[in-house]
Length: 210
Ligand SMILES: C[S@@+](CC[C@H](N)C(=O)[O-])C[C@H]1O[C@@H](n2cnc3c(N)ncnc32)[C@H](O)[C@@H]1O
Image (cartoon, rainbow, N blue to C red; front, side):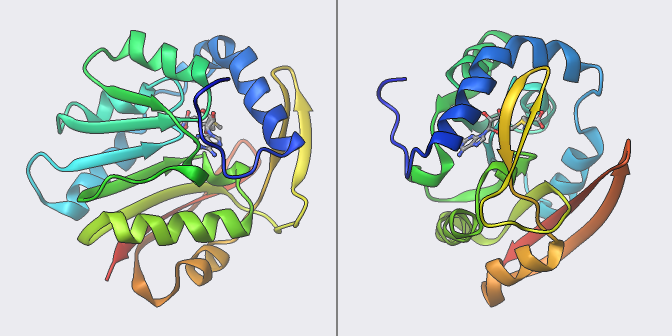
């Protein structure tokens, strides 16, 4: 994997990237069944109330949600640490702009209206999430939104390493309160919802830049 800047490439992070690169095509087939996050995309555009906003998606994966976002704006940029996922997204959504990048080392462009992270910050520890929230705040326009979905659970410093048919990945679980604490007073919570998806607990939080 050449040319990508990483904040810290630990063995666990390398393993996560290798798993996504190796299994990206299979995951795309499997998770396409779930469908795009139509409701979330509708909600975040509603919160903004702006024509043709600039949306950055972190961990865009196969571009499934990019397709939905691009129905409502043409100013979209998706980044992902997995080169294979970015190639799939480019094939699938030719209108989209996609870059291979590690969000933890990424220089966010300025003037973003919404930053979306669907199930991608779950591979980042607290220190990294805090740094991403700070960089995002600098990059968002006043009143801009950081829209995040994460698995809910107790945080462990070393993360939880799991192996399934796709490979091995290390996860960091969070509670919404932990994200609010890391976000600090420079964001206000605009929306918070918890979901039980096949006995896995998730939450969605939308933070508005103050
Ligand atoms: C569980 S998948 C979710 C993909 C997609 N957002 C979805 O909801 O289907 C996690 C995605 O985040 C990406 N990812 C993980 N860590 C990342 C990082 N540090 N920077 C950028 N992308 C990352 C992975 O490569 C993978 O595509």
